[in-house]
Length: 261
Image 1: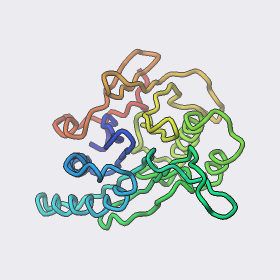
Image 2: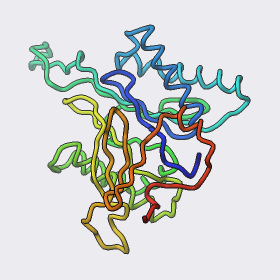
Image 3: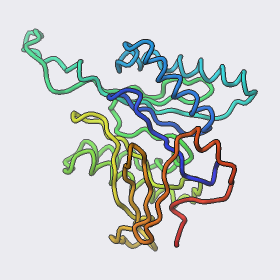
């Protein structure tokens, strides 16, 4: 389904643990439910620090089983991120004695990719982890995003994420990458907890090199589902779960961000 942008790419594994994927829909659509079932059968696995240590091996096990069953070895990658409110940072005095705890909680973000699923990043030292065909768009933006995240920027993570999305989208279009379609699905993780971000925006925020403030697209939630909406025409495109997408036989090229009418 390379020319349709109707699949949900980010999911809650637990209320404080999120997973996103890029690549083969069939394999990702099997691995993610496998992880959910593993957490249901072993609740401790849902703790961030435990999951971070176990997830790469679990994902590789599921992937290898799928390879045996299907005879395919597709590319698939996952981003996992979360926060653990049961593990606040300790406050210590000059002698190193714990005197209390701070409202700064254990956070992790990392990505793994086939075939090895080796962990590529395990901290929030950098504010961005990108996977998928749009990843080359990150080149040259690392310092910009780092300064945005750790500088004097106001507006919180929601605002910063929106700016990152606009900047990354501009870079992807300048590189001529045409396989990234649809509206960006964004998850925010801060002391308010993980959540999906809804927003309104522009298909072409810098058309012909000039900023355009007229909003024409929206991503919102309805009944727990992402919905892409064209604000000019009112057309809505629901985002489907991977198993639902695999049932679609129509291979028509249909990228939401390409639609002019």
